[in-house]
Image 1 (cartoon, helix red, strand yellow):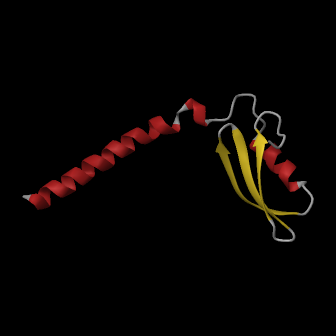
Image 2 (tube, rainbow, N blue to C red; image 1 turned 180 degrees about the vertical axis):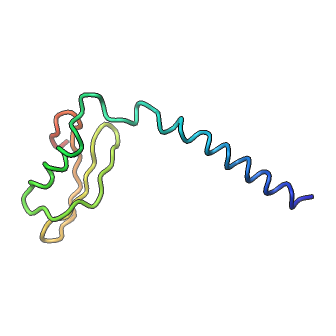
Image 3 (cartoon, rainbow, N blue to C red; image 1 turned 90 degrees about the horizontal axis):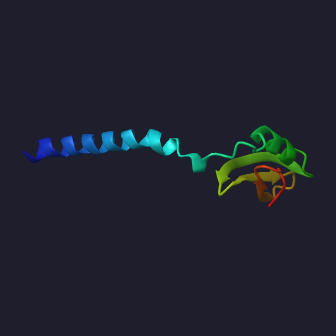
Amino acid sequence: MTRKIVPTLLAAALMAGVGLAPAYAQTPDRAPPQNAMKLSEIVAKVEQREGFRYIDDIEWDDGAYEVTYYTTDKAKVEIRFDSVTGEPK
């Protein structure tokens, strides 16, 4: 009896999680504002910084683009950019 219940519960939990995923992805407060700069413009600003080597990570968090990049001397740089002005915060 127990062997039949566990897979059923697991399947039900999985389906519930899958059903919520689209709603979470469409939450408007997670997206940049309509007047935000294009991400490609932010990347171009980072690439023009002195000693730039490569971008490691870009995230959208609390109204700003968070960019982590490395310099030619292997220093790790983490910087937040205002999404509208493109200026460092």
